[in-house]
Structures are given as structure tokens and as C-alpha cells.
Length: 388
Image (cartoon, rainbow, N blue to C red; front, side, top):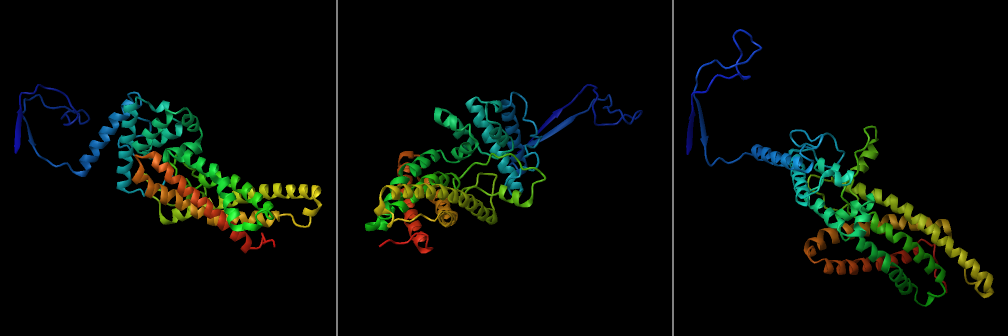
């Protein structure tokens, strides 16, 4: 159906549509009455461009409310990202729409909570402006802030990025570090059996290394929400590549962000290099302490001098670094990115207690398995020998 509206008898007025005959740079309408006919049609389906325009208008109004009546600087008229953000979006139109939607959701969450950008951490506020975080992440930040402990941890960049991606991250750290000592010791007993007391120096070294490494095994492969500032334009190609890699090779990409297969492989390589350094350093500490205890016991117990020998520090440390870079790295990447984030979290998102209990069981089993594998690996490469 079409509707016709006629408006007539307009008075004389000036505008910027028709040039004046006497002055081509002066625009006016002739002082004549005219009739304006407007034809409208109902039941028109909006095109994608119209829907996008409406979305941007909504976002603009939300931005005005969240930023004190003025739109955020750098937002532009179309709500774009304001240049190269050095992130992982594919640069397509769909990516731009995702960013527009993220920004609208985030600003709506801020408006609902009565918060402004000045009350947020600078990196989070910048990510909201760029459309890199959806409203769910902003709401999670507000929820975490209600706890004094979480509010304190959100002040540290590394914790903030991990807690926003997984609100059970701190629970998982507690699981690893809390049960690590017992599971490592149980695994050592299972593998060494009757030689457990004879090889107590090896056991102690392994447990000390495990305590130091457990925290990093949760920290490095944990999924994160990237709030990092853009890289400098002068950064090299390798730095730019690893900057775009996720922290977990299997983590779910947020709306407006995507990771290529090569970037996901890069996450494994980068975390492997870090875990090699962590494992080597932890082993240097562990074997150093063990050798000190062995020498102290030799001085007190002459009969023990013939039974025990110093643990090879350098070879053990390098071997443990390789083990963490390969075995531990892959196991924890799969555990955090596939089993927990992709399988357990979607099923048990509304049942945090059950989810925590299952994560406890899975991580305990993974820690025990890793201890068994380390003993076999250490014996296989010859840095720990079976004592008769």
C-alpha cells in the first residue's frame, strides 16, 4: 500500500540546494510557493545496509550515554575500529559488523550498569571502543568486581585477561597447585614401587620441579581475552605474527576475532618456548636443592654415601624443559582449550559447582598422567637409572 502526503504553500526561505542566478556561489529557493509530495510505502523489508545503519545509530546513542553525552574519540561516524588494531579479524565486512555488534553490546552493558569508560581499566575501555570485546565480557568484568579478591586480581593485566575469558581460572590454579604435590608423589610411588625410598632424592627433585612448574602450566595455556595495546609499526614480521596468535591454540575466538591454522600452531610453538624456559629453570632449582640434600646426608650417614649419587643438573634441567615444551604443553593446551572451554563449559555453564568438580577430576588425572610419563621419559633418555 502506498500513502501520498501533499504539503503546499511553503514560505520563502534560503537553503543550499539551488544556485542563485546572480551569484552562482549563493544558494536559495525562488520565492514561489511550491507543493511537496511525499510518497511512502508500508511493509518495506530493510536491506542489510539499512539494518547496519540502524545498528550504528543505536550504537552511537549508546556511546553518547556511556561517554558522557559525547561519542568516543576515534569512533568515527561508522563505528569502525579506527585503523589497524593489530588483531586477528579477517578484515571482511562480516568482521566489521561483528565489531559494531560487539561495541553496541558492550556499551549497552555499561549503560545498564551505570558505568562510564573512565571507571574501566584503560585497556578494557580501549578494547570496547575498538569493538574487540562483546557485551558478555563486560558483564563478566562487572560481576568479578563484586568480589574483593577478584577486584584486586583484575588490577594485574595477566590475571585480568584470563579471568575475563574464564571465571574459574583461579579455581583451576588452586586445583593444580593444591593437589600437585600429592598426585606427583603418588605417581612417583606407582612407578618406583619398592625403589621409592632408595630413589627418594629423585622423588624430591621431581616434586620440587612440579610445584614450580604447575602454576605456569595453568597460566600459559589458559584462554585469554586479548586486551594488549597495538604493536608499534616498526615491529618485525615475527613479532607481529606471534602477537596475533592466541594464548591457547584451541580456544574459542570471540566475535569479531578469528585465528588462522598457522596462528593456532604458532600458539603451541610460543608456549612451548616459554615452558622450555620455565621447565629448565625449575629443574635447575629442584636438582640443585636435591644435590645439596644428598651431600648433607652423605656427611651425616657414611653408609648412604655409596648408595646415592648427585643428580646431573644440566642434563636433567634440559630434559625437563623439553618434556614441558612438548608433552606438558600439548596436554594442557588440549585440556584448557578443548575439554574445558569447548566441551565442559557449554554443558555446565549454569552449574559452576559441578563444573568445578569435574575440572578437579580431569586436572588431577592429567597431573598424575604427566608424572608417570616424566618418570618413563627420564629413564628412557638415561638421566635417571633404576637402582637395584
